[in-house]
Amino acid sequence: MQDITMTDKLSEARALRDAGNASLALQRMADLQVLLEQTPNTSSLQAQVLHEMGQIYTATHNLPDAASLLEKSLRQDPAQPLVHYEAGLVYRDMGQPRKAAEHLEAAIAGGFPSLAAGVHLTAAYFASRQSAAGLARAKLIIAAQPKSTDTTLRLGRMLFDRLYYTSAIDAFKLAHRNAPEALDPWFYLALTHFVLKQYPDTIRVLSAPPHGAAGAETANLLAAIPPLATRAHTIALE
Image (cartoon, rainbow, N blue to C red):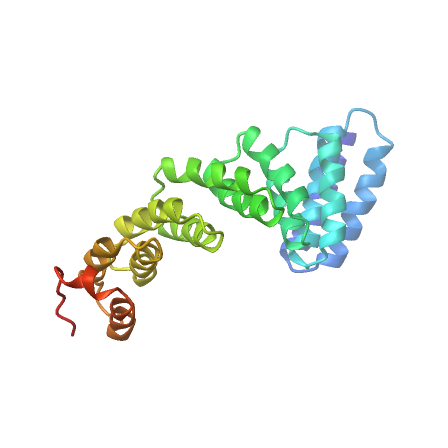
């Protein structure tokens, strides 16, 4: 009967949360947590309550309290990939990329979808100056050839910003292949070829612009290519 009462209390708190009354929901959950701490064999339910309290604090942008509660949830039950993932995002938003990376690593190791967590983990590695780990994670994601243009474009830009141009090209190629009419993958692919002085490839990409591409961007990039490199290549610009 006691377990049913505890569950009912949690359901009541959830109803308050869903109705938009976050402060009262947190109070009810905190009261429930006090009862659970005094009750044997409730670590699983404690982990759940602490997790949901952490989610409410995350939604209300109280990140320090969110992080504290998610950590407490994991102490009750370390095998929670979703909680590790959410903690990783909270630490990312708090400007603690190394802590974010630790939790995102744990999320992936625990079975959380590696694509969703992997992009955030790549960013956390780079932000915490773990460049080799960031590059390795980015390459791993690109090798899986995800269908998400946003994912591959974001990875490409991270790599481009850190001067990993060869790997950036792989990401931009995949993004452009997945969305041939999208402007950003097309332009970044051409730009990265240009930075690497791969001028024939730059011209080849620019010669097949997506619908709505700005002629000025194409013209400016072409104008920067040395004349000898363009002698054998002509493009009819609109």
